[in-house]
Length: 142
Image 1 (cartoon, rainbow, N blue to C red):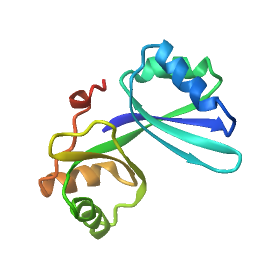
Image 2 (tube, one colour):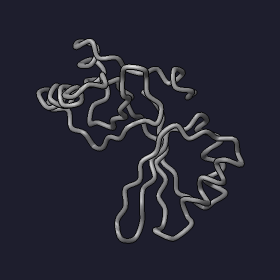
Image 3 (cartoon, one colour):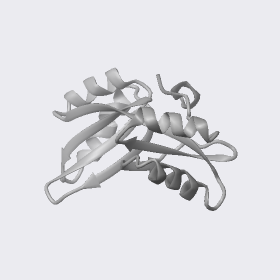
């Protein structure tokens, strides 16, 4: 499992720019991100190379930050592969809270990030079906 930052922020012009600038100044590399929003606030989810430094940089921007675990899965980059993984998860009744893709990708695989109801069951299911779970070090995360 990989630690992910969830940053709660106001829907204001320039807020995401300020956050990414603060991370840049702190030397933090963003490897993946996803933004979900409502009328009043947004949630910026990120995988970064240094979670602790990122949290400090985000605190300087008065951000509320939560860290939770996600699973990164290598999905063959051919039509139907993602559907196959999702069908396995559905058969095992593993609920997906959210998912997004990773900037980095392998030569033959796309990388998907999953936040699910039961990470341990997901990992066991993927391993039983020969689906590769990405090690954080492989994509520059520690």
